[in-house]
Length: 275
Image (cartoon, rainbow, N blue to C red; front, side):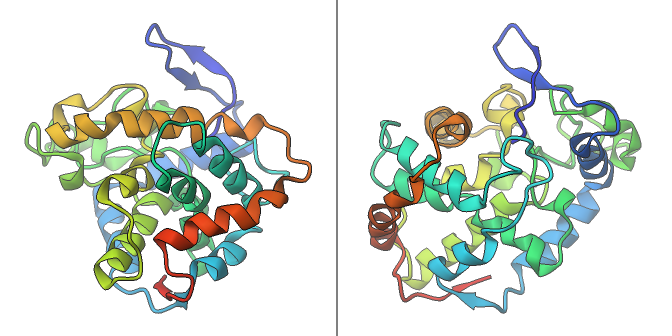
């Protein structure tokens, strides 16, 4: 998530704003204008159904480390591993189980989609449901005027293609590194290569959906399980992902051996995940 300053609502949710013509402004104009339901479904099929590259998690972390996230002005001078370590350290104070250290460390590894040929507007940045009317609280929501789905007779309505209370698992979220890594880890659990519980993978899948877990929008789509697990997303946001970027980074890689020790408990170090 990009964290440049913006107006704050009564609920405390920050509406991020960017200067016209800035890198982030151009990024969100593309992401919002191009992320239709049809395009999102096509990307899910392309990158989730066929994952021919086999890499261990250590290999994947090395592979994505030099990516610069165009949506995030806070991290353009740091390698991805810096934020990963900061998140793992923050997880120790989050009140979540030990798996949070591993999840915090690997949650952005799906950004390696950039190296697989997917342009950044479809990989990083805030995420939201498609196939229904966009919430005004989505970052740079004025760009939805350029998205053809907002003129569709069904996709432009409140519920769109969904039923009330259907649950996030049945909602199509804009494609990106969240859904991608969630699928990879879910398949690894089924295959015996990982032992993460389902609730640990929940923040992997939805950590960029700030409009849901921070702005409180699309509440009518949530299931009872979504509501029960919402505190996990809040703890992940507050203690692991969002505010750890501001910490000291000197000597931070000294934490890596201990972090990998935890990761190896939940993902077999010799296991080749499908990317």
